[in-house]
Length: 222
Image (cartoon, one colour):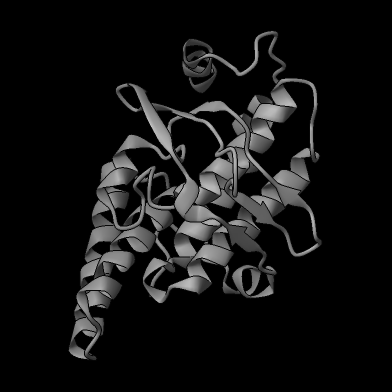
């Protein structure tokens, strides 16, 4: 497939013209995929990776996915979320057999009580396959708990470790069920977490814990 925007960097084309070229390339490439017998699931994943990823400049790194180890989820069926307000829930761990994730290195993460809005995905990207904030809920719970403990002054891991654990947990889910696999989502979440905003949010300290919904909304706007 052609990479959108990889021509002469000295040419400053308007964003719409660049997007139109991406769309044209996409239609050519995925028409060919359809002729080769690919199903609609592959087609939708292609929309996600090709139109969103290439337009934003996110590369699909198969080697990074392949080389990432996997861990183990425990008691996923015991995840219980209580509705608080639109888009926001409260997570309270079960008294027995609480949800947890054990990393490939043996670290077990058991999320505690916190307010939760699913995965932090841009609203426009939710139009595409596997970009719902709730598609990978167990992974989002693990990472949000790491961020919560950091904000509350009792970090379990450092910033780079938190990104690595999120990536590992995401791959763990993806290899458990082929229908859940999307390597572009894997790369896009890493790109977002390691962005300057991701690092800035990680370093913010809070006085009230669990961090209230109102404060979490403010953090998302920073």
